[in-house]
Image (cartoon, rainbow, N blue to C red; front, top):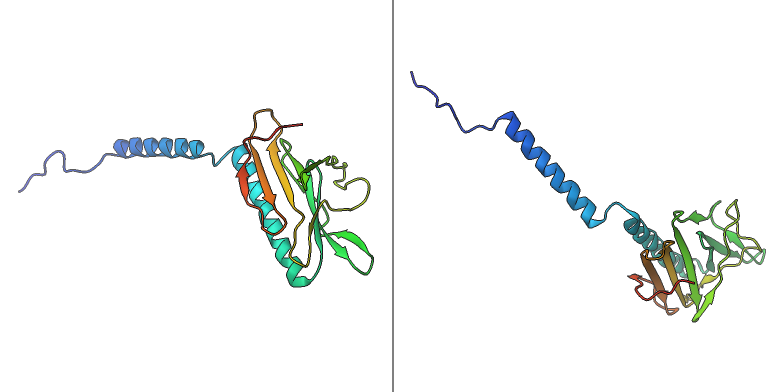
Length: 179
């Protein structure tokens, strides 16, 4: 009869578990170093979401031959549509989109900084529904520079800029001065 050698080339359960622990640790470190979790990634997602929303609204305005606007506060933004029969701006959706508590918006229109109001407790902006950014049925957009930033002093700042004809893209703002 033929005898098998003591080490037939198989891995033991302990060796497999050690390899799995090492791989799990390396994957965890890689995920954290890439920044998938954390405020920087979430802020970038918020900026991309807002830029995408502006792009969709610009297309909808042209396709539907309607005027759209964005009502901005320091903590939120809401889409408005101009109702020609009532001659006033109507909100789309029930509530504005709230930013995370550690983030804020600021905006410049035609080179001048706007003082954005704080949102009321119910999310409505005091003083009526008048958008700061317009997306017109002609395809034009209000020229703007929008800054979405962490509230802490050295926090990440991202900007969306449009000259009125091109859709904004998200860029890191390295020269932003906080007021």
